[in-house]
Image 1 (cartoon, rainbow, N blue to C red):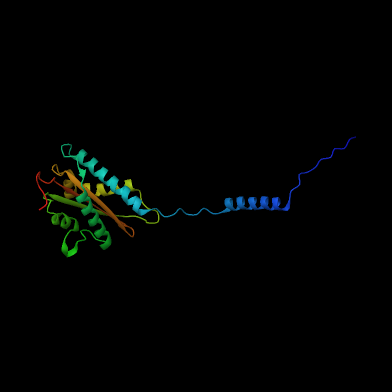
Image 2 (image 1 turned 180 degrees about the vertical axis):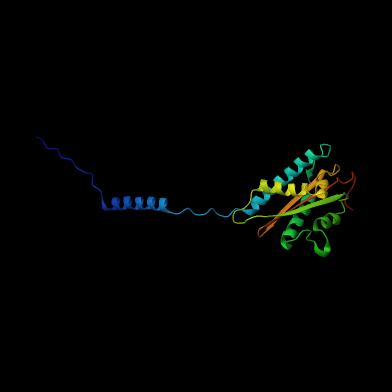
Length: 192
């Protein structure tokens, strides 16, 4: 019978320590509890909400009144709508202009170049800031609220409105939205 010399690989103490460390790390990773996701970025969700809100307003307008002029976003109306939404969120109230009146309408009236007919829709919805919200679903919710109101629905479908601006703002667990609708300025109108 012949004997064979079987040699085992030699493991140094530092190699053994490294292997034990690696196994410990892997075990710790699999045993760690699931951490909750970070809170959503509300500003990102609000920006998406504005885009969806404009899209749904335009879609419903064409559905309700196929002869209506296609609405285009107007920077002046968008700025006024955003200021109005922020004022409502800050005060936790609709038409947050207080004794001064509606901030959106004030801004438009202060601009000599604006000589159109204007209407405004506003609404509020609750959400859980920890979980965020679905911008598409909330946009649909705002437009649905407006469609259920005769005067707000009339603002959306009025044939002569050609420009719009939307604004949204959050405060605590409330999101405020406003939509402004206006006729085009007469041709040749200029700021004085």
